[in-house]
Picture (spheres, helix red, strand yellow):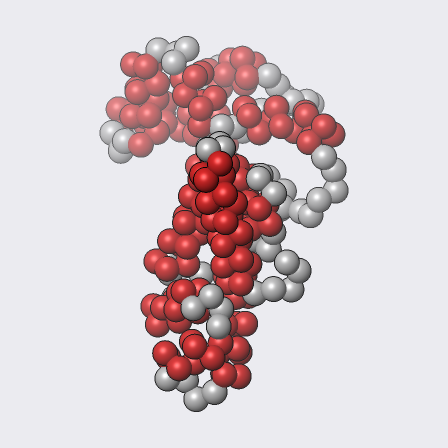
Length: 236
């Protein structure tokens, strides 16, 4: 499927899977994989048809859908669009295909055909923004991490870093939040966000702690959290 328009990949994949499914239905064989594959392709089709993130103009999305429905037939699409020439349709579909592939992923449909549907749909949803690390990792922390880089290792070599990421997840924070006094946490949030002068000094100390003002001793050595709190409370 190399160098094919993503629209053609989609059409050929759907027809191939549907043919296998019909054969399995005829012989009474399990077609659960084909159903899952077709469901994945339907999700991609719905994205092509309705989502503005890959191309903003509804007119362009309608052209793409018509091209798909015509089984990527340039001549038929030209006639139905009333286009000046087949070359103009080819140029338009090539442009739209590249735009779509940048979102859907160059190998997503191949993964579906290989039966790796879960991998394919995670790739698709990540590429289209439907799945994002910020859905799971605490807001703002992604900005503190290094910029994403190309493949240079495998997960086996990143175990320590995976553990670090897992400590930053919203699920992990929620689990740890349940270990603490909710009234005390609520009070700390009040101190941080209110403009009440009664807690002005407390607010200053708390923000100093959050900024890391008490994170080192006089010699510049790092302090653990308990030592930082003790140091902050010395002037309280």
